[in-house]
Amino acid sequence: MDKHVAFVGAGAMGSYVGGRMAGAGIDVTLIDPWGEHIDTIKRQGLVLSGTQGSATVRVNALHVHEVQGLVRRPVDVAFIAVKSYDTEWATLLIKQYLSTVGYAVSTDRGVTWQNLGIILEAPPHSEACASSNRYVIGGVGDVSVMVDREWKDVYLYYSNYGRDPDAQGVLVARFPWADRDAPRGRVTVWQDGVWLSPTVRPLTGTDEVPIEWDYPSGTPIVRTTSPWHDGQTAANAFWGPSLHWNTSLQQYVMLLNRTRDESFTNEGIYISFAPTLDDPRAWSTPKKILSGGGWYPQVAGLEPGSGTDREMGGRGRFLVTGRSTRFIEFR
Figure 1: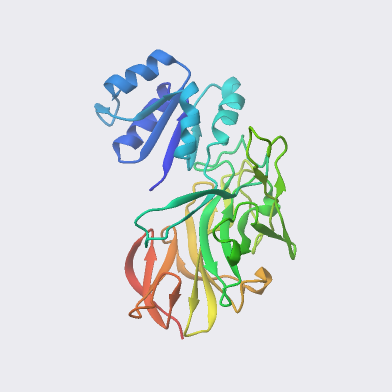
Figure 2: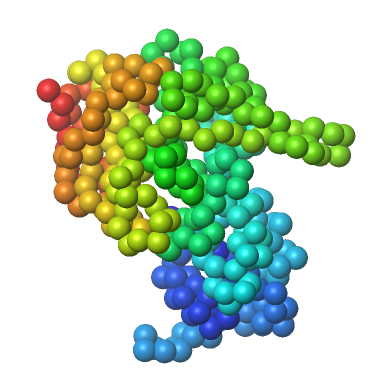
C-alpha cells in the first residue's frame, strides 16, 4: 500500500501496529502528546517484541505541536489509537491533514512541478469519526482525470468516503480547460443533474488568511446499497475509478473496484461505458469483468506514440495495483 499512514496515539497499540507496518516498508507517522516518549522514538527508534519476534524500527514520530507539518505531506490513512475519552480531540487533530485533491503543473515534461494548491475537498463535517473502516473515516481521493474530446473541460472522477450514504461512491467534478493554470475555486461538483460551485469558506479571504473553499456534496454514479461507516462489517460500494478514451469503441471506458466490506476486500472489477463526459447519467450499468482481483484497475494502450493510460485501441495491457499480467481487448 503506497500510502502515508498516521497513528494518533503511540501507546502500546499504536506503537506496536504502527511499528510493524513501518518495518514492512509502509510510510508511517506516530503522533502522541507524551513528549518524552516521542523524543525517545526519534533518538533510538521503536523497540518491538511479541509473537513475531523482536525488532527495532525507525519510524517518523511527531509531538502534537509538530502536526501542522503534515500540510506538506498529507495523510492518506489515519488510525485513532487512544483511549475512548480522547477519541474526539484526536480525530479533530488529524482530520484536517487527511488527503484532499491537489493540483500541480509542469512546463518541462515533468522534470519540475508547480503546486497550485487544493482544488477539491470533501464537504465540511462529513467525516465519520466513529467508523469501523480500517482505512478511511471520510474524505475524497482515487482521482482519475480526463479532458473531454473538445478540450473544453477537465473532468475529475473520484471516490467519496464521507458519512452521508447518499453521497458515497464515485462522484464527478470538472473545471474549464481554460482555467487549468488557476483552477482553485473553479471546480464544480455534479449533484442531481446540476454542476454546483464551491463557496468561500467563512473567515477566509482577508489580508491574513487566503481564500479557502468549501465544496458541495455530489451524486454518485451508482448509489451504494450497503454503505461505509454504518457499524456493519459488510459494504457494497464502487470506488477507485480509472477512465480512458477507447478509439476502437469510440466511447469512454471506466474501470472500477467494488468492495464487499469495510476492509476493502474486493468483490470484483467492473467496467462501464459512456459516449460523453458531460452527463454522468450516460454511464452504463457497471458489469463485472473479474471476480476478486486487486485494487486500482487500469489500462495501458499499446499503440506507438498514442497508447497511454488515457487512450487505447482494441487491445492493451490490463493493470491492477500498478502491475500487469494480462491483456484486455475491446471489440
